[in-house]
Figure (cartoon, rainbow, N blue to C red):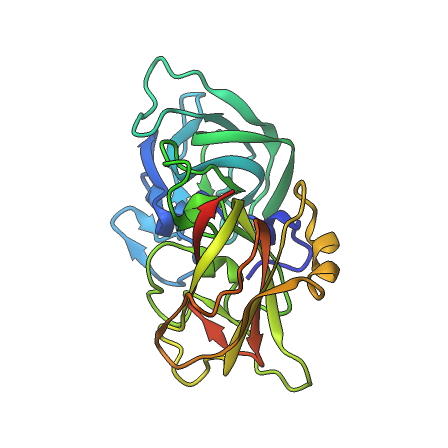
Length: 333
């Protein structure tokens, strides 16, 4: 769970170094004690007392051997989706006496399908920064950086439990300009900005590709014990006209909402959540209140109110519960 003191970008942008979305390790200098791919696991790192393998203590993260040659270790990663990185986290939890003393990050934005080679021009993403063991270091970048690949350097060696790179997804190249698409999809640049509650699952999950894999792969709120209902604010990847909606309650059988509704607005620029959220109470209705069922895909087309271009949605669930996925199909404006 992200601490309450974490920067806003950890809640308002997806982690583009998430292996469950497709992030991968392409090259690594050393991974003697622990495989680099563990560093991209979206789950929190864990510690297993007494668990050892052929190389030594099992650690949940990337860990290199002790260097004796004066160099340093590094790895090259392909992000799950190309995007503009706004902030990051270097998580060294449970690496108490074996963490690096410093880290540096470089990035590159390559054409779709291309991978880094000896001719790749790497740009600075994060200058050499001191880190410490058993810590979570959050770093906000001064300016967003477009990336498809990153290279992490650790000095001189050691272990990193997780690397998280938060940013806005760049819509795929080659999209037909007027073709119908899911305007809220994470892969098309959609993102969650705010919510009333995310006790069991963050609304960012609503925008992920495919159907949810289990009840933890969705947005779920606590049981509401006071009047009202839960909601989340979502930003489209691009302004568009929404014509049909899908609400998927996959895996939510005893805890699905009784109903849902959607409000929408066209907002210029990219305002912060604190500005958008109060306004959202008064946005016009895009989808009037609709009953929901357990573990089902609900398709709405005739029910969608004729609306002009929109950039933001307020997804209301009544009164509380869990939803796996939300789709907002339409045409870009």
